[in-house]
Each structure stands twice: as C-alpha cells, then as structure tokens.
Length: 275
Image (cartoon, rainbow, N blue to C red; front, side, top):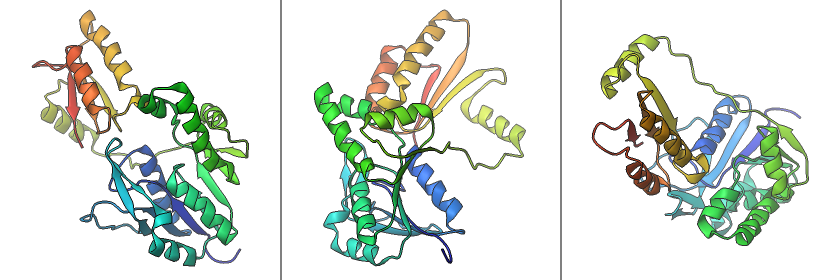
C-alpha cells in the first residue's frame, strides 16, 4: 500500500460532549493523524461550537437526546453528508459506538468495498435495563445492537471480560485484545499543584481524599460507592472527602441518594463538582 493509510473514524456522539469513549476516539485521532490520513464522521453539535482540531471532521444532521444529554447523528437522512463521505477515498472504517453511525459505517464500507472494524467500549445491557425495565425487551435491544458488530471484519476489546460481554451481544467474529492506556504527561510541579488543591478545597495534608471523574450514570455504580462510604462515615474511624466530577443522566437520583445517606449537610465529606 503506497502513501498514508486512509482511515475513517466514526461515532454517534462527539466533542464538545465528553465521556470515556469520546476521549478514546479523540486520542486515536491525535495519535494517528500525522501517520495516517484521518477523517472523522460524527454528529453536529451546538451551532456555536466550532471544530478546531488537527484532523478532519465531517458532521451530519443530529438531534439532542434529553435522557442522555447528548447530540446523536442521523447520517442516512443527510444527503449532503453522505455525498461528501462517499467521495472520500478510504482504506478502512473504524466505528466506536453501535447505533446510527455504525450502521452507516457498515453500509459505506460495503459501498467502498473496504474493511470495517469496531471497538466494543460499553456494555449497554444495564443501561437498556434501567430505561425499559423489562428483561425481555432489554435483550431484544441488546441483540439489535449486536447486529452492528456482526458485519465487522474484526472487533477490538480491552479485556477478556469485555470479550465475554461482546459475545453475549451475539457477535461471533474475530476479536482482538487492545488494552487502553494514557498519554498524559507527568507533572513536574506535583508539590505546587498539591498545595493549590489543598488550599482551594480546604484539605488537610494528611486527609484521605477519594475522587471520581467521569459520566454520572448507573453503569458507573457511584450509588454503590456512596452506600459503601456511608458505612465508613458511620464508623467514624476514617476521615475522608469524596469528590464527584462530571455530569450525566443519573445526577438527580444520585444527589437524592446522597441526601438520604446524610452526605448533603453542611460540613459533609461528599461534594459535587460539575464540569
């Protein structure tokens, strides 16, 4: 193959919304764009948002889904978007979420006669269950999502447990383990940053601090952490502070649970920090 590999990355929601999967795909692109020709197909977001990234982004029509607080794409109903994507020369397509954009990625790969691969990031089963409440309907949705992966030449997972989850969605094809890592540079001024954090949040140097950063959703089991910390709090043996940084559909329920557990009073050891 001559020249740079031409890759299309695809996802149903994207920046400026932020979650673990978005961050993962964004870092794929940041690490690849100098070595490969990267094109990204994602949904449009707020009209005021302007893409300012070193790789090419193509956005399709979208709608905001209130229950998930994100914009989701509808590529097949966007004629201009389809025309642009069909004109792009590509060697492979890689999708990161199994909904509308995945279905379009599969059809686009067939049209271009190129391979399509995916990364299986999230076990959607508990998310579906929390929405529809019934096991039978949950499994129908799971199998429907699983069909998106059936057309893939290969699917990447980060661990054997995630492979088992993928198989339970009905996928029978090739699976490759691809563990995730981090690219964050090491801080050289750790002591200075520690002092700034202690001062800003009123922390003592010997105080035990717990931190959660990410989407506030049922799948993350923050409710389990809160109930566990309630036992620690009541024992009075360990003094701690727990910070939750993020946003998501379970925010209201978790705030209610925190209040019920006695974490919302003045001088509490539990704090919300919103992004």
